[in-house]
Amino acid sequence: MSPNQLIQGKLRPDLFNELLSGPLATRVAYLRADLCPCADARGPGNPDPKCPLCSGLGYTWEDATPSITRTHLLTRAPLPGHEARERLPAPDDAVTGITGEDGTEYPPESVTVARDGTVQWVDGVPAPNQYGLYTVTTNGATLRAGVMSVMTRREFQVRGEYDVLDLSMTLDRYLGDNATLNPAWDCGESDRFVLLDAWRRHAQHVRRGQFGPTGDRTVYRHMRDLQVSSIVNGARRVWTPGEDYTFSDGVIVWVAGRGPQQGASYAVQGQANPEYYVFQELPQLRQQDGLPLPRSIVLKSFESFPNRRPDRAAGLR
Picture 1: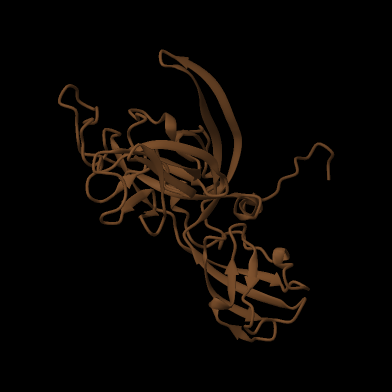
Picture 2: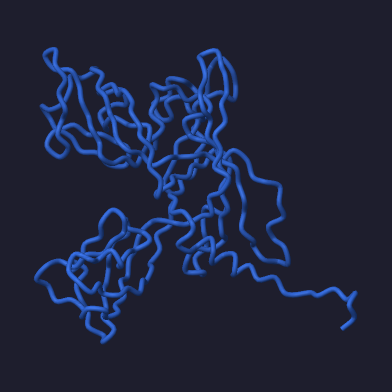
């Protein structure tokens, strides 16, 4: 071969796709934006700040995260209490099946999955032998993406100094099974992404009944270690989850006869998954050689979404 001859090889996007779908990628939830039909009478193209659907944001969001089945090969820990070697990459997925290397089937209730993805076998139930291999089949609505260039910049406005968070994200055309199309690959302006593996402390005031009888909405959909408190008879009272209220998908629903009075303000504190919205797509050709290559997009923190005010909840449906 001539030393000046150009070496050509066939494009192998599957190698990069493995990186975007593997354990080094970030688990995310995808929320598709739906343009609200409301309009401000004072100017066309602007949302109605009193709209009961979007609360003046101009969009509502529906969870479009695909559900996918995964199979994980694990090794039984050598000693009780040392199950940290057994870890699922998506701890929120539901366990649907367990099979030992000898073909023995175990019921899904034989194991519990901790917050960090650690698998622990329930005491007193049949289990694989120590160091034995077994597979766990899970199903859940999560997808993975390459999150890069997480940036914070400081801006100054009339209301003071604040930080704006940006990041870039790379999305594969297919999910982790390399067969199911990834709906987030077709994402557009104002779509939202939730980082499921990151947590940020969050606190806000909520007014009971502000969003109607369906429940009180928090800024973030995913929160844990929630503390809800209000002032009762001149003293602070912390309300008990499950007994006084329930929290699911960013909505607080009060039990009848419990909680602050209608129209009263109360405090919500906890750890929240950060959320970002699509700001723009990087100018790239994504159909090279006839193959749907991964897309790269730029996102901004949802706290800086246009028309958003601190007294508006961002978890609108």
